[in-house]
Image (tube, rainbow, N blue to C red; front, side):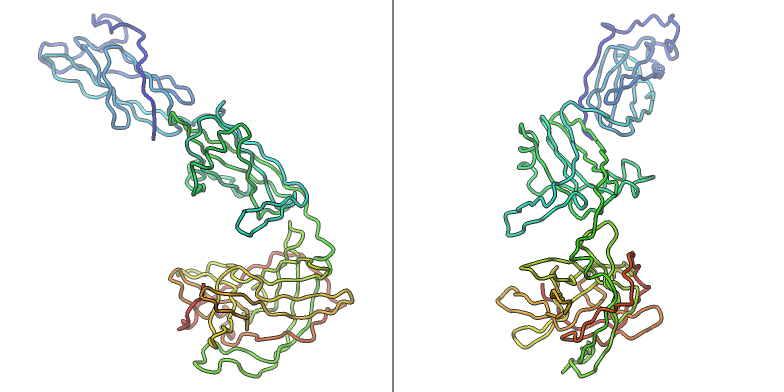
Length: 450
């Protein structure tokens, strides 16, 4: 905890008569132990002034805070530039020929700055279709319902930590807890240079939901070591499902002709027609994100995450690889993961966020299937053969998952989905599908390709 200490001398030196009210007169014999100072304090958001009555025969006083010791002949001492937190100040009297007194102690808690003229945070919502080019080939598109913009402007800011939280989820959370969960920047100096510039730094938090209150929390420290913690709230705009997304909402029937036996050491693909039904539902607070139920062998309640994208006049529904859906304990997470055919004739699981499966809807409502594909390091290519839920441990070990009823977890749906048809009688539903209780079955002796 950083601080700046400065003595404030209310008197040139303490009176030492021992006769004035409030003075501690114990231990006055020559060569004896001086009396313990009796302390009082006053404080502001960032300063503490501790004072005491003059101790008889004392020539000076030792003042201690956070392991640092200061000496003064005055009967008060002021610490400035203090950050929020609890402080314990100790003061002892000393004089030549006398034994130092015991330390008098006083405890104070500061809440920190509520305002600072050297840093401001201003929140706003992105413009419709606002884009950000990250310069690495990634371009993000934001809407007023799925992003929050923060403008940070400062003078002499030397450090910054930040985070965006659902306001409702922060209820009952202390500032100390919030501060411990804030993020930092890799290129801190580059960020600080922009924050301290005339225009300041503007960032966009993504992944927000519509009609939701968010709180942007920022902890900054200036060049003098003074902290300032600020929290600002903003509510995102209402998310209205796009026409492309609405076209996908509903229940579908389809079938596949082959499955993958994940426990087979050779020839894992086998003929086995599987008819299934799946439902596409809007994720509340979004306009183009959906949950797809019925795809997993685990059963209903384990939802795949989907994204609706219109591209070149075609309406696509992508099911996204590697989206953790549940913490099932023992260091495992239930994760949607693709089992892929590699161009060298082998097969394995491929990590990464990509479209594992895409469904394309034509103007006449016809739906076709296309397996996700991509290129790996070393020039290998892959094509998704199957897509389902698996357990991924913190040691990158894969585990087969089964539901709470012990239902099958070996055979994954494989290859092309055929005869995909929307059921006219089924109604679209909006929901937050909760993951079922899952347990880890056998551990797979298979590699993971990054």
